[in-house]
Length: 403
Ligand SMILES: [Zn+2]
Image (cartoon, rainbow, N blue to C red; front, top):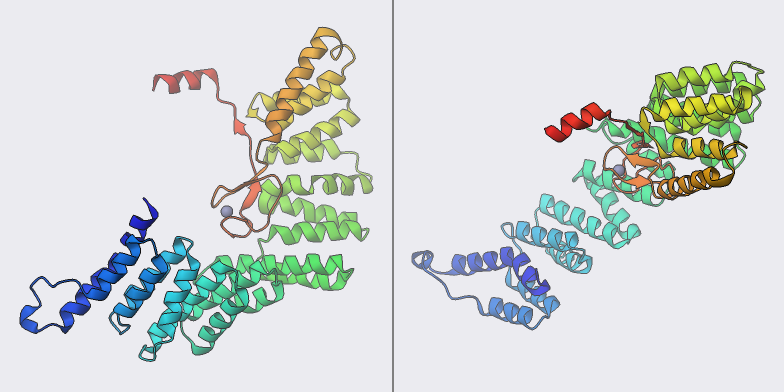
């Protein structure tokens, strides 16, 4: 839709309100008759035709008197402009509303909240914060204002203030709040660890588990801290607990888990990983087990494992590793055969580099590194390692083609 036509379409509610305004002021007997357009409305249309939308908006704002019955029209128009990305215009409309003295408290609350959203969208976070705090103080739109403050502090990565606000929210109305509280404590624990304050980090991780007993990130961080602090036994127990809490995250702690087993002098590393891989097949777990097998039982054992795995999973990372092992074989990696293998390896690496490693379970956002908060839908703990697709047998494929 051309910008001019689109704007005209957006202003239809105002035009309708203008007709109503004219009709309302006419004699009761004439209300059902057709009325000529208000001159100011025609001037507004003229500005639109001349592609001067800001003057057109000024005209409409002047035309449609703000009272109890036209506030909704102004709010709808402001919200439409914000959704279209025209935040400056949305701000003007909402500021115009707030400047009116005749607004009811609830309507003023609506306008303040919308203006706060405009400021958020425009990146004017200080102004948005003031408005949301004012709403919380007034007890208007309290839950929504607190949620917006939480989003705002998340943008600023001010985890302490995120916590303050989240603890005022009612977890019964939104179960994701306790998940977010657990993640804020984890963020603060990581900050503390970076500053060398191990005691404060430990306290934060306890609080994370208290808020969200299923917080797998807290378990992972506790395991890593235990390993760094020279306690591989405790680290191993925590890493094994990660598999119970959320097996899809095991690949994230696999190198540390193998390290803990080795520090403990365990000679059953392949058996532990095989057991984990049986419970949860994943690319990284299979690759980790393959590397351990290559070291402990030789290249052939690793290639057997990868071949068995690849017969069931369309996994490029495992295929890359299998081809690497094949190329490294002295009898295979030379001559024409070696050249063919290297071409296959190059193609596999090329495809692998374009493949997403993580995906958000909520919105499908894809990434190549782990984000605890999805950058797209902003939900916490929803970005997980991508699982390979199962290989579909020829018979199933044939049936599908017939269907
Ligand atoms: Zn998402």
